[in-house]
Image 1 (tube, rainbow over the protein chains, first blue to last red):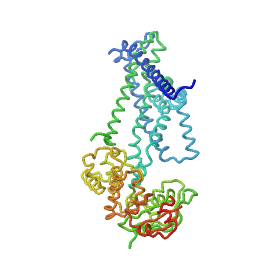
Image 2 (image 1 turned 90 degrees about the vertical axis):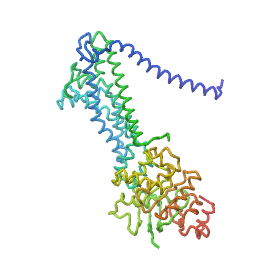
Image 3 (image 1 turned 120 degrees about the vertical axis):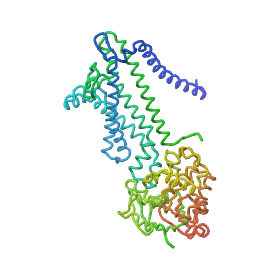
Length: 285
Length: 251
């Protein structure tokens, strides 16, 4: 039996709708599940005390929140400028030759390397060879290596997507190459650059394996980046795997989700305002 | 009669492909010179030699001389950035920056180091006035340059060029993306502008060349076939190929 084009049309729509529903539905179920399981764990005591550990996973997550914020801040401080700079270089300055093709290929490959491999590298280089020990700094430097390929690729794509007419218009006005990049190309690519930063922050918050082998999991408040510490994701791991009350991990997981949510919302809000301020209103009189 | 710009025996190559063959042409001050010809004839390439926009194309090279006020702009001592301030350019596709209308016009002056708000406001108003756009958008200066119509965007791009006070304005098919009414506005504007600027326009619209220009050059396959007063070119073309083109036999 041949289907009429009308029927195939409906079937295509139904297939797409079903896929979207399954994808969104699965995510919603996970979030709701974590909410229900985690909400009962969280109270002021859980948020305001440091973990104690033990088989009952006692104590809260205060130091783990601090550890997570340290990791986000340091990783972005290291990988942000380097990644954006490298992305600008590849998109604007690098000639297309065998060397830059190899560089791009290496970056692409590195983006797919499992995080535990970065962890091993970070352990050998930062923890041992550079004598940083298990510390926030060693973890953040390892994480920086991990997120760099993603930042570079995303920034490069964002800059390449800026229409050539913008560059020509600026150069034709007597702007220098750098003025053109700084005042025309980068502002136009800003939404993509913000996406790169958000992706990097997401990786920094979620990453567990490579931090396990570079910053340990000390259950106390770090006093400097040279101290070992836990992040929230490590805290989830410890509570789930090394205690007999794994459900307490859901409390940490819920806080983790909320922090990611807040960071994303804040970043989008600030960048949205910044973009409106620098690029002018697109609608309204 | 003084030439504002003059090309002497210019050859241009994209890698091994020769795009311009021995082009010599003089562009009179405070007049509009039109360059016509079929697609791929080299007229845009030639225009972009006049402010060295072709410099950014890898593997390209130029021979011959291009003079601005009798100075060769391809001399090593010439600062390209300085040159492009004197020789502004309007492109085929309106290309306002994703910035406010005000910042689009203030872009050039800001790069020159002008940051005084009052001074910038003055320049922006004067430039938008000169581009015949001020009355339409004076209350919307904070709006994005991308939020106005195509014709307004092109006049904004002209205002942006005027703000750096150039001496020559190059226009690369400035109306090909615009509707007839917007096109008419730009053509009227060009007549105003030629009082203070020398204009070179590339167009594939022969009626436009006939309407706006005083001099016309006809390009074919990288060569300048014929150059002369617009009236003569269109009424009494000397070369058979020019005649075939303007009577619509090809192109």
